[in-house]
Length: 243
Image 1 (spheres, rainbow, N blue to C red):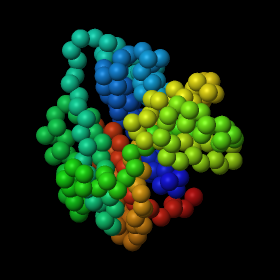
Image 2: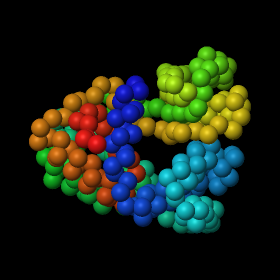
Image 3: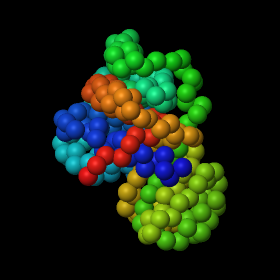
Image 4: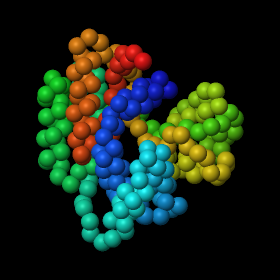
């Protein structure tokens, strides 16, 4: 599981090129999360994690505050979630998560990215069953057994725990996100989470080679350039770039 997670992190590193695009995506996600679960981060753990992640990605406070102010007011934009699935170059599986105020436009834009890179967009569920939908938390620590005990006492269905050097990574079902995070905070105090998010992790990876590498990277770039796209998950294992 850790290798697939690392592949995901490496692919993310090259997609967040434009800061304004990053700010826009965080602003939209903070707005939706606050609108649905409340604007108080202490009572909305998903919002709290999102704000912490935004700050680590150097999103300015005014962007975060503006999104919270919009969420606390009446009315506002009506964003809904949308998820698209398909197969990219080399037959690697791809999941695209969006927040949109116009599903027809968003579907057309996402489908265009697939079509222009000789990829195939599929029906809902066509590839997601080959991914684990996980809550992931990573933080400094060495007592793996104490972490497991705290989570089990809170009735969290832990999928996996990895310890590498002085870093512990916890994987749990996405439905246990809030319960797992609260259990960790209750047991170990205010942790500085290096990772605190929900992801789709592929159960198997698909090596991408030859001409497919360039086309697959083009697909990722095109998708991440769309304003409505929040996250792109995939099973591709791309060749390591030379330093």
